[in-house]
Length: 346
Image 1 (cartoon, rainbow, N blue to C red):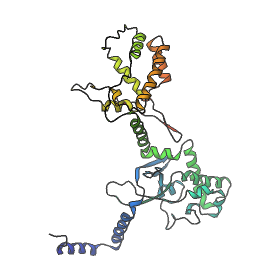
Image 2: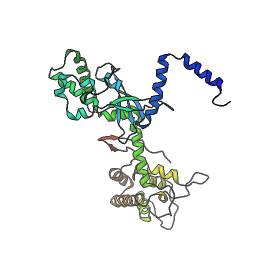
Image 3: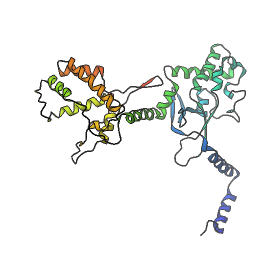
Image 4: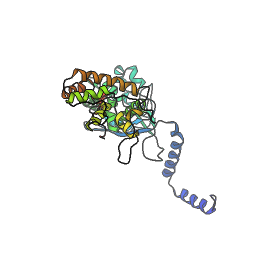
C-alpha cells in the first residue's frame, strides 16, 4: 500500500476528528517546540539541588560556558513564591522579572543583578527524541535575588505580603554559607564528575600517544643502582634480571607524573597471551610533554635517592616532594578542589 492509501487517510482523519480541542492544542504546541528547539542549548546533566528542606531542579547546559540553570519553577519555589509563574510573569519589564518588580525593592537591586535576570530557554534532558523546551534562570542569580530580599528585610522595607519571601531568602543564604552555587549544581547533576573526567582526558592527550614510538631509554642504570643501594642489595650492571617488585616501583613513578597517565599507558601497550606487556610504557609518551616531563621527574627522583641513606627515608622524601596523583588528585575548578580515586592496580 502506498502512503496515500485512502483507508489510512480516512483512519487518520477519524482520529483527528475525535481529538478534543485541548489535545489538538497540545499536539500543535509540541510540533512548534520541536521546530524551534533546534538552536537552543541542551541540558547535558540534570539533577535536584537540595539545600535544607528545599529541592530545586537544576541543569548544566552544553553551551560554551556550561551554564548552570535552576528551573523557573524551582527558582520561584526557592524564594518562597508560587512554583508556577503566572501568565507573563517570566517576561521582563524595564529589565526586571516579576519577582523583582516591586517598587520597594529597587533601592536594593544593582545593575549587575538586572543584567543577569534574563530567563534561559533550553532543551531539557528527557530521553531520546524529546524535543520540548524549558525555562530557567542562571543559578548564580538566586543568591543575588536572595540578598535583595534579605537587605530589604533588614531595612524593614518589605511589605507584609513579601515577608515570607524575605524569610525564605534568609534561610537559603544561611544554608548556602561557604558554598558556591555553581559547585552545588555540579554536584547535584553529576557534572562535577564529567568536569574531572574532561580535565584528566586533556592531560592524557598531552602526555600519552595513541601509537607506539621507537623505544628510548628513560629509566637508566643510575636509577636502578640507587634502588639496589637503598635496599642493601648487590647491583650487577651486566644483569638485566631484577626483582619483580622493581616493576611496581617503576609504575609508582608514573603515578607521580600526571593524573591518569599510568592507566592510559597500560591500556595502550601490547601484551602477550599471559597478559604481560611486550612494549615499554615510555614508547607511548608524547615527545612534546610526556617524555620531557618524565625525564625531569626522574632527575628529581634520583636526587632524592642520592640524598637518602635507606629506602624508607627515600620513600618519605618522595611522597613529600612528588606525591602520587592517584592518592588524592587535586585540581582547581573555580576555586574548588576535587579528589579523584586512585587508578586501577596492574
